[in-house]
Length: 200
Image (cartoon, rainbow, N blue to C red; front, side, top):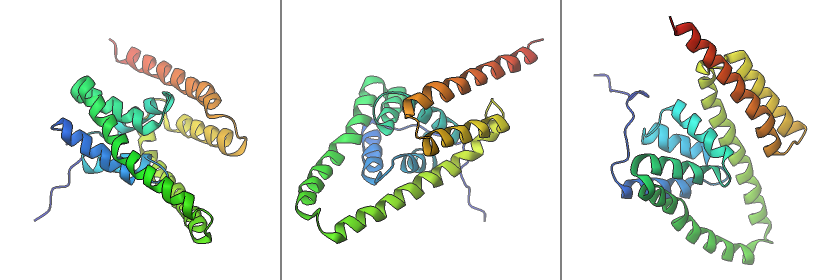
């Protein structure tokens, strides 16, 4: 008998504040070197609280807001389901246990930072973090096919952003204000045109 594999239409919601707190605690504990891959796996694939498209939209909003992206995402998701209480529960999940872990690591690091084994281990984790981010980017790349700005233009914006940040070393804020606003305006125009065609 074939097992039922949930599709993206089978999304659900967190059942309680404690579930929200525990989910974001587990998410935060796993987020070594980058939260995007872990957030995508936990919220989209495992919990199914968001579709890939919803995750991409919420992550975009979280990125343009001040503060850590995943913390912003926790506030958005918590508020959406439980209001202020949900935002506080999700934020607590993101910060309480990780803060305790970081304090312990900081104390240990002051004693062992000069050891070559520790230095090399940290370099290795940097490579893993980069791989996780690239892997998540490739997973989300498929969503460009349904993007309202069109696949060729979406790829152009992806390439432009990569060049400006990775090669020309533009500040992130400058890229968001230039490329981000341009892409948003282009999407807005395309959606207006699309709505105009549907109107009899």
